[in-house]
Image (cartoon, rainbow, N blue to C red):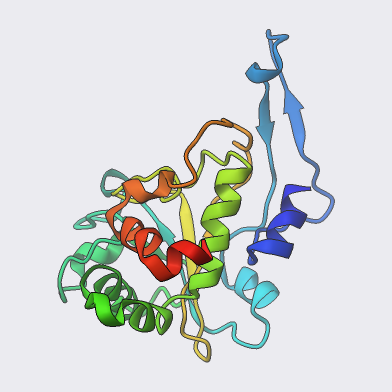
Length: 212
């Protein structure tokens, strides 16, 4: 069901693999809150891009990682701007076009999120990100209690999410990491993601706040 919700409201989601099922297990426990879930979803790779962006599948697919899980030099994927040197951005691990050591699109995204003037913030960010999809992504994650997406939980270092930027449509779209920690809490703030400074600026902008 959660996969269908993703596809309908905040696509792209990640499809279950052919023949896969969602399995629940509670070894040694009887309380429902102790149960664990395993979800077998699509691999994030060029095939994913083709499945979800068939007319624009040559773009860049990135997976965000924290500094301690990144290639050497990476400073995390928390949407912070580190300047024009690409070295700190290797935390945005390239899952397509990996032979191209080019993070210029991520650098532009993070610059606009953090440094575009307030007067033209929405215009500048809309040129590099599908803002409505981002807002749906953040809202849906919160409503279904997804505790797996670092950006959702306000992590300033970023982790456990992905982004896609096409060749023709060059706006970034957010993609969930997986779906095995849903319904982990019902009391989270709708603005939990605002613990991340870049997302705080996005969510707290007067025009975007009403859209959110």
